[in-house]
Amino acid sequence: MSDEERAERHMLEALVCPVTQGRLTYDAAAQELISQTAHLAFPIRNGIPIMLAGEAREVE
Image (tube, rainbow, N blue to C red; front, side):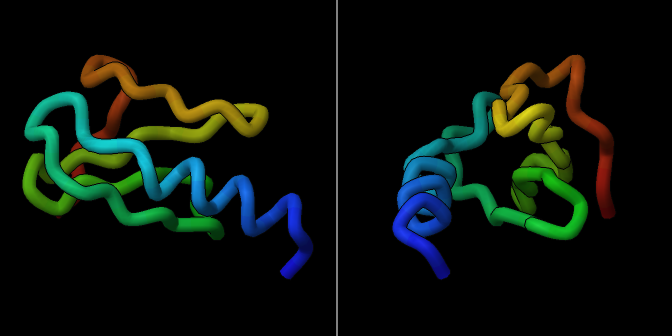
């Protein structure tokens, strides 16, 4: 893992769910941040997390 990838991952881990203020899990394959508590997946587009509840998809 490069320094740039480590920095990006560290920044993503600092974000919290805008609905619950809880922890998010990074799904690199789907390019999403998952809130298990809110059952929402927030997309990452062009490297930018979209932290709007209206843009999130529901997950089980």
